[in-house]
Image 1 (tube, rainbow, N blue to C red):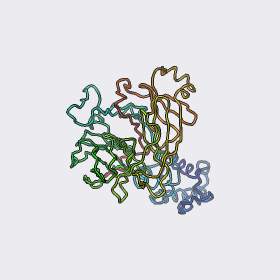
Image 2 (image 1 turned 60 degrees about the vertical axis):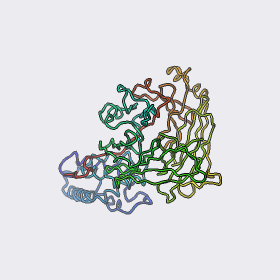
Image 3 (image 1 turned 90 degrees about the horizontal axis):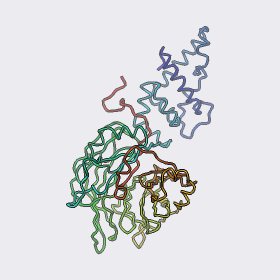
Image 4 (image 1 turned 45 degrees about the vertical axis):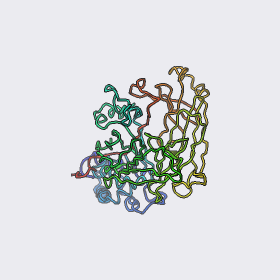
Amino acid sequence: ILESNSKQLAAVTSAITLLNSHSLCLSASPSPHDTGFCSLIFSHKAFSFSGYSSSCDHMKKKKKMRSGIDGVNAALSSDDILCEILLRVPPETVFSLIIVSKMWLHVICSSVFCQHYLRRWPLAFRMLGFFVCNNLYLGRGQNGVRRPRTEPAMPLLSTCKEGDDLKFSKTLKQFGYFIDSSNGLLLCGRHPKRYFVWNPITKQHYKIPKPRVYFEDLCMAFLAEDHPSVDMCYKVIRAKCDFGLDEEMKTVPIETFNSKTSTWNFSTLTCAPSLSLCPWSVATVVKGVVHWYAAQRNLAIYDPHNGERRLSSIKLPGSIDFEERVLGESFDGRLQYGWSCKSGLEIWVLEKEEAGHATTPSDDGYPNKGWNLRYRLNFKTMWKKNPTLMTKSCLRDKETQILSFLHRNSKSVCIRSGPDIFLLHLVNQKVEAVLYNGRGSSISWDFSRVAPYFRPDWPHSSLCLPGKSMA
């Protein structure tokens, strides 16, 4: 790393200063995860580069400095030692260290380091915009509405430059309609046979083989691994929506595609006879557990990792007179549910399961676990607290509705009034306008699902792609 190049010397000097500033030296109190590698590297005072230029005339000090530099060079050339150091550095600092060298870039961007790093530090996500999926165009019924050619199949209301680049690229035109996203991966396609998964970070896409079974009405789920990876490990689940009732127990056919095996597997889930999944809906996945909307204000719950192949269910809380409803994941990994009507909105959180994620049904077919009301808000009172924004946006005659949750956020939600989108902070009821690039006035909001798209904020390098080397 440290040759005669002054830029590299400055970069590593800065890197070690940053590392030392975050209590990585021997004198700092050790982390419970420490393994002693840091003390091996940073226990020598000779590693300090202060005074390097001023000691050029003193050969003895220069030799000691060169010896220290060689020691740093040898230590930081070991991937294992370097990883142990970087695992203790917070995200805002570790991302800046990719400029030190190709080796540091390769280590930080690798999926193996990412997996270990995310066990200690939370992964940040950045919102690029909102994808719009018009439900009228889904399916292929005889009386189905066809999309006009002038209307894009996958509209994106971009909220940043990165979103603009994605919006105006030709990539989105290749994959059909937006279905869902999971940890940055996009699931797109055209029901019932064409599906694609696209990784916007690596610009790679994968065409999923055609499903083996035809479902006239279906709902879907998309599960991707919790860490960014160039390998795109994910599962796609298709479930048949059937409103028929049996006398005793009902079965729901599902098909599951696993990217690791590249095959569809057919199976059936048992459930209560009164449980019917809502067609053309997309599941909300929380810690690997799938949650689908069901008829009569029910929520169907399926845990793919559980040995019991069944659908549990729970009643959704709140008023029957809701107009909009959304599901999401709270900051502490619980399912949260929001609904709104003309007067206001409510946010509920599902109580934490004691033994894993699967629910245990009670005698009447519904689990004993309940919901906790977290926020109740009146829209009229909210807008009175934001008079300037209400006047600028001309919202007096427009109805306000809940739009979506943010990624693992329990303190803010997205709401809309007409084509205008806002960020509502639930604690103080402060409202901020969300500026987006797109034709919001042309969207059929009453028939469309508007889903925010979040991308993991993790560096990527082409060196980590298969077949690439650091040479």
